Image (cartoon, rainbow, N blue to C red; front, top):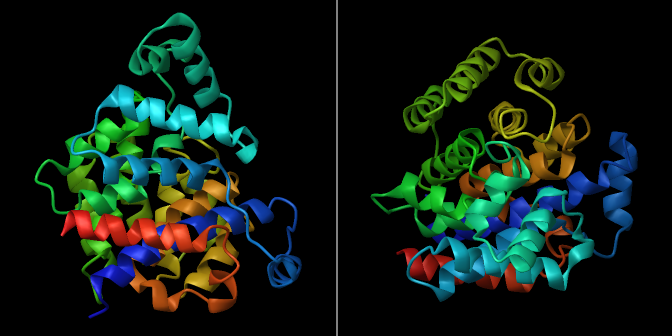
Length: 302
């Protein structure tokens, strides 16, 4: 069996690579163009997806419990350091409201959208929490707490929890039947909308449907419901081949960097660091620091 530490590293690193390569796919929209661009790049630059995941990893390593306000402050400081990473409109509005109106992060998150954002922002950064809490009895509760500084909508939370459960499931699987993962995701989901999408993933895989067909059925946008299921399908479609699976997926996705980031975490958790292409690995921005964070998360969780 692959070493668990390799899987921890694989999850964080493949997630960041999926983010960086997915972002490139907005510009290089054909397979040959994208692969050539990756080969020609000196550095693969990640977006806000990985920046916030790094902030979450740092927070978990530094603290014993998840305090919503302190975690929100950590996210805000990361944004202030690197506002150019490509943040969507939601988090900066929340950070500004908290600072100017002196309200809590949770209230600010509820204020900017009726009922809160149901985007995929809490899912895109969830990988460190899935690793850190993977043996925790209150897994769903702990993952939920990491969402609340920016995302309070049940669909946003369910999306993050479902992706985290997928990562947790894969960490100790050498081989698995697709239905095993589907059953775990159905078990942990709380929203009927997500349960329906998960059942559709199962059907699409059984029918050997294409990524294009799955994109139409499962969604193709930046909401949690419109992206997390497609990321899971893309992983299952090519679960033994990270490189092929990622390239095929990001070329047709809507939210390309985030879908790449989420599915990358699944591939990395399952295949381990040794199955990440070396010519991608050494080009990843801040690779040494991301690997160090994975080491620390592993040490804290075992």
